[in-house]
Amino acid sequence: MTDFLDTNILVYAYDSHVPAKQEIARQILESAILDESAAISAQILSEFFVVVTRKIATPLTAAEAGGAISLFRALPVAEVDAVLVEAAVGMHQRHAVSFWDGLVIAAATRMGCSRLLSEDLQAGQRINGLQIVNPFSRN
Image (cartoon, rainbow, N blue to C red; front, side):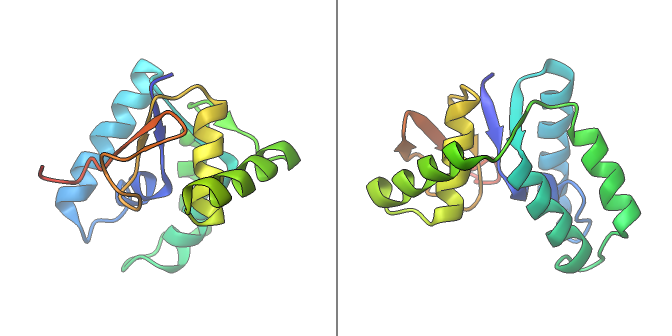
């Protein structure tokens, strides 16, 4: 497993109001599924559902979002359990990230990923052995 996908990658794949990011996100997802090269977590799936049904310019229906989640389950999915929550607390304390970002980092670590693809964390930063990469950055 190489990459862990943050929620924004999945959301942009379904947000037609940001076409440049949508194209990049779709390419990442297609490659991840075909090559079995990325993982996600149950948290990512939950956040995806909330964002695409409530917060994007043209929200998906619950059925559409559920269909997308079924597709994403082709990727390995880290379950959120008490051990992962405790690890997230540790990430929050040691690395000054939000609890939710700590949960993403802990899940990526559990899945053996070396990179975390995210628009929300500082690109280039290394946290807990993970290289943070912003795939939407022009740099």
